[in-house]
Amino acid sequence: MLIFFCIVISGCNSNENPLAYQTDTHGRGKTDILIEESFKRLFDTSIYTFESQFPKADIVPTYGTENEIIDAFFKNKAKTIIISRDLTELEKKQLKAKKVEVRSNKIATDAVALIVHPSNNDTVFTIQEIKNILNGKQKTWKSSKITLNVVFDNINSANYNYLNQYANRKTSAENIFAVKSNEEVINYVKNHPGALGIIGLNWISDQDDFDVKDFLDGIKVIGLKEKENSDIFQPYAGFIYTKEYPLYRDIWVINKGKRSGLNSGFVNFMIRETGQMLIQQSGLVPANAPVRLIQFEAE
Image 1 (spheres, rainbow, N blue to C red):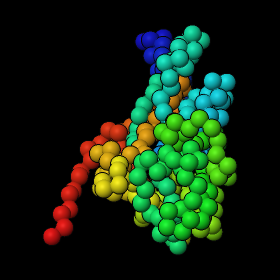
Image 2 (tube, one colour):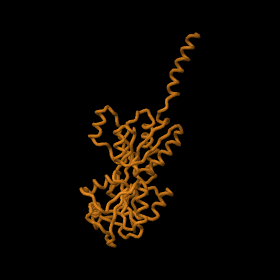
Image 3 (cartoon, rainbow, N blue to C red):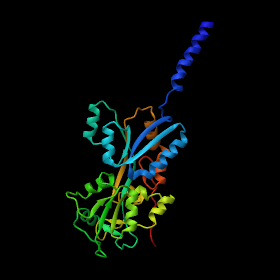
């Protein structure tokens, strides 16, 4: 009986000890995640909330440009990245050839927002006018004939990539330049009446956020329409969901961390109820939660 008792105790200890010393689980450990700077405000909040629920988890975000993040991912400098697109089939084949398991999850739909100085009377543009501006065909404002300068956050960013592709830009224009971040774009527009700013919507979408209110104090958000006599749409969640606001895009989490580790735990958090609610509260469109549309009619 004594020998049997010792064997049972030994067996229990051998089962418990590995769990006691695991340092990388869904709610425990430390990891770095690379995130497109356009989505900084959403993920500052999301990471804070996740770590509040899992005090033994430490997620260290590094915000950068989309091109640099993808490059770092392929150089194995990060297990998880958050960008505005899924990996291409070629990129997935390259990783598969290296026997790297990659999982992609769309977590939200975001948009690119266009902003101007409060003194600017040009607050509505057609899609073709925006394409003409980005291709250097329209170089002045409609109402004032002042030189129109387009400012991006960074030439390697998701914002820059998106509008380059959207406008089918083939050559660079003299009136288009970049600063270093979305916040710098906002501040530049506040101080330059001739500027058209290109930012990620997430920087101004959560209007309950005091910082967002400060950003909005000193800029106007441009409305877009398909043709001259078409309806005008602002980058609100409802119009992004219905795709009536044309400059919409997705937010993707690309993960090659182990399924039982902290990276996967954070991804699960973002695609499930709490993460999706955070996305909705931030003024974006969640990928996995129902969206309620309310239509108002003027009398």
